Length: 340
Image 1 (cartoon, helix red, strand yellow):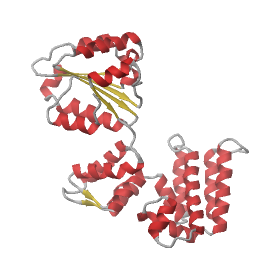
Image 2 (cartoon, rainbow, N blue to C red):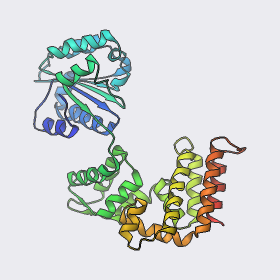
Image 3 (cartoon, rainbow, N blue to C red):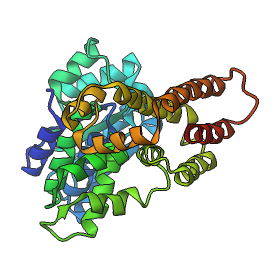
């Protein structure tokens, strides 16, 4: 049966178990959260010695896996069998392996909890195999959260840590980290170490422990550009150049293009209230003042020139009229954007 990740976790904490869990989807955070809870909480340390089996998809055959699943637990009421990286399991992609699992689904071992952690992909729900999975076990499809769902996730996570968070701090967390739920959870856990239960996470705390301790993020670069802080912007781009594999240049150009496109709108807007202006350029009202200040730093003429510079850089990064490295292009671009 289809269940949400939150429902599965709630049921597990209540001691309500199912014989088979198939966890799939693009968002790895919930798959990892359920798998970790099952691995660490369902058995005592002594019981894990003989009753916890963890294998990986690449090194696992369906026949061997189900033989293990049919075993009875030793000195415990339950055994747990987990297949991590199940998307790499060849037998989940061929008819023979699928048939073996479908046969097991009809009569699963009631004292075994079998978990498939099938990350970043989903089984075709229209296939016979996919339909059987959705009917005869707990199926969780973990989707990436939309941007508008992130504040709710952050607020709920903070509450579970016995903390509270101001609205501005909440949106700063989102701005600094984006929609990487695992990183959001990790950073908030780090904040929890430095705070007492019942404390409130403020924007100052987020800036101190999340923002300023990161040598690079797109939000920091955009903020430095808006303030026309050339040394800071150049420093961030230099950090990118030292790790070009992780910080590709083209996405950065896209971010900056969106920034100056917003400034172009602001130069021509007839709106007067911050809330309506924020709505017009699709930013949260908490951050609109930064954009209004940026309009004072970049004239209309310079803003239009900067959009041209960004278009030229985009072409160069795609190999058109380029005879230098990506980050040499970026360093020259940053200079031109800030020096009319």
